[in-house]
Length: 219
Image (cartoon, rainbow, N blue to C red; front, side, top):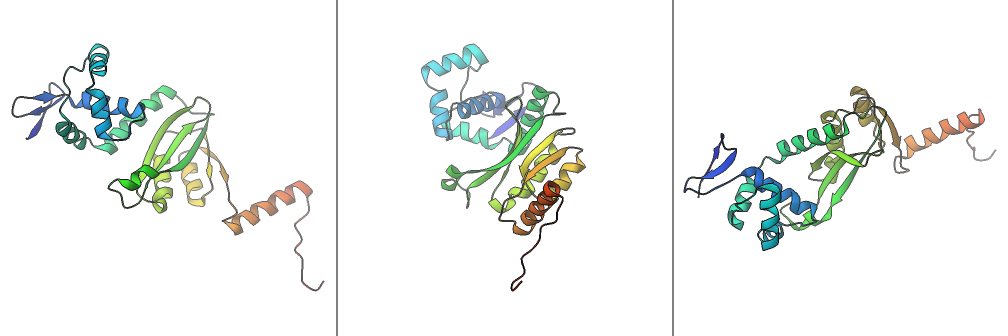
C-alpha cells in the first residue's frame, strides 16, 4: 500500500481511500512511551483496547487507529531528528529562560536497545534543568565513543545562555559551553590522572598558600 501527504488536512493518506493523521500516530506513540511501553506492538495493542479507544476519542479526537502494519509504516515515516528538535523547542518554551539556572548534562546507556537493530546499545545525552525538573533536550549516539560529540551538539542546539552547566569534565566541551555564553562546573574523574592531579594541586595551593612538595627518593 502506498502513502502520500494531504497537506491541507495534515494527514497521511492511503491512495486506496483510507487515511490516518500522522499527528494522531505521534500522539499515540508518545502516550505509549509515557506509560513505559517499549515496543510498537505493546503500544498498538494498548491503543486499540476498548477503554483506551474511548479515551483517545473523547480526550484527543482520535477516531481512527491504523492496523499494526500500517501503524509501524507510519511511525517509520517520522523524521526522528526533526521531531526531537520540535520537542526541544516545546520544552524550552515551558522553561522560558534558563538564565541563572543549573543544567545537568549526562549520558545514559539504553541497554534495551542491545536487542534491537543496533550493533551496540544506544546512548542518550540529556539536559536537565535542576530547579524545575524539566528535561529540555536530548540527543542520541549509537556508541559510547560518540557520546561526547553528541553532548557538544546538544549544547549547540539548546539556548543555554546565562545558565550554569554541570557535567563530567572535557576541555573541548568546556570551550563549547563558553561559546554559547554559559558557565560550567565540570567534575574530573581519577581516570584523567594528569588533569586530576593538576586540579588537586591547585586546590591545595589555594587552601594552604603553599605549593605541593613532591617527595624525592633518597632524601
